[in-house]
Amino acid sequence: MISDVSLLVNPNSGRSRGAAAALRALRYLRARGIAVSTLMGKDAAESAALAHRAVAAGTGALVACGGDGLVNIALQAVAGTSTPFGVIPAGTGNDHARMLGIPRHDPVAAARVVATGAVRPIDLGRAGDRWFGTVLAGGFDAKVTERTNRLRWPRGKLRYNLAVLIELIALRPRDYVLELDDRRMAVPAMLVAVGNGATYGGGMRICPHADQTDGLLDVTVIEHRRLTELVRLLPAIYTGEHVEHPQVTTYRAVRVRLSTTDIVGHADGEPFAPLPVTCECVPAAARAIVPVPE
Image 1 (cartoon, one colour):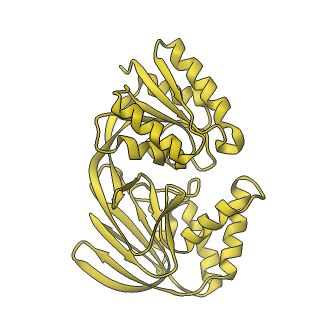
Image 2: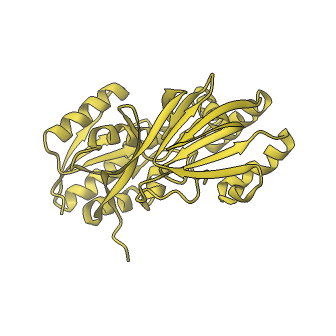
């Protein structure tokens, strides 16, 4: 049983739902007799510093209340340590919560997982000294994420859909060099995604067979074809059925190096590193608080 937690909060997550979600979670946890310290940075750098400080001080668990970007900040602090992390989803995508089976629309139910759940080792992706939990986007999808983050209207998934339309207009073939462990290949593609988890973008199953406990990264490559074919293929990503399409190839590897020009890779929905980038799967790099299997 966890007796104390540090609750890392982004009050602006999910159109400012973060503060309300944190308050409900905090009340539930304290009612269960769990001591809660609230950490709220004024920006990402301060949040990261607070998270690292809490882990170094020996907190019982670091719990991120916000979106996937805040969970990514928490991962940087807990990776490679014995400190478990939990998630109170309050963002627009919540793909970490989806990956871990945590209720995404009820902060009290998510807090209940923190109080009564099991601690399970999970793999993380690592590029240099940075970690990610879900998917690293390295192509058209990275451009869409970047565009989405710049748009101020509309809200929610409509904003993501608008970003897709804008980037489709500018889409052009891109040459990649893909290195998978001891294999090297040149591929013309519009999208290369490297997944520790299955989804990004709020449930798009880009790497549908990814397993965060198998010690491998899943790689999905979508070749560049005519725009009309691409438009027909995009809806299938939500179900994972795109991997059956002839223009899609999937791979698995421990180490993935992805090279092309003019792309900033995005991971866990945030800017991560300019390509080329080398990712590796680090088995059992973090300890996640997850629901107890029924």
